[in-house]
Image (cartoon, rainbow, N blue to C red; front, top):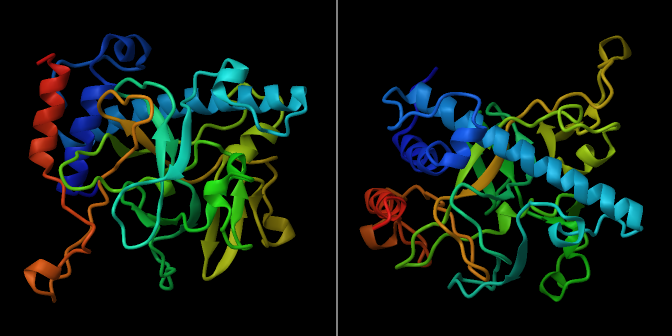
Length: 315
């Protein structure tokens, strides 16, 4: 395995504290829980990736329950966790007060969430690492765990249709079926605040692993398409435009790419906005005061880890 970037290791250490140490995680985990994070980066990644994948599968299973409830109630996929009995997070998009150059949306939780909760997913088009013509997008996110890029620009859940906060979206907006795939709308924390969620890769479960009789609900929850050379080459139903003798024989085959989830690293209270560390790269060709946009303040990783450790220790 290639060496992990130091910022990824720091993220993994934070996630290990909230995913791999509490009693609930210990009871659910497929591997023994250690008292301290593994010293080897690959072992740390393995432990966190496994727990994140288990957490994502549980959340996606709950979203399938919501989909089934909505279908049976004739709600057209508009169920929520409260109406269906699902345990998935409740979040909403709103007009954020974060001081960006233009008005911006943000995401806030509607109910309290404990550390280690999956709050939302990052949606969008997936581009391979070899892609030369990446879009000029302010929502282009690098999934360094897999070596691909995700562009969430223009992707919104159908559950937002008709809401005032999205009234002025362009006609090119892509409306997807996963109400929790709003990670592209989450903001960087303003000065004086720490992130409360951290992005983490996970393995997409198959529809069979979620206990589904058909792929219908699962397919609606995959908030991605795959692009290559400017062309759409894959959707949840499978790969497109391949010769007949090479076409996949599997009905809605396993999704081949990792998903990205935003997982809480401390308690999140109702009405609290979700923030994650954008980790913008400084523009080295500019004067020190101009290396970042005006709205961006770098997060002190060491201070953040210390604050999370003190909180989890009950201080």
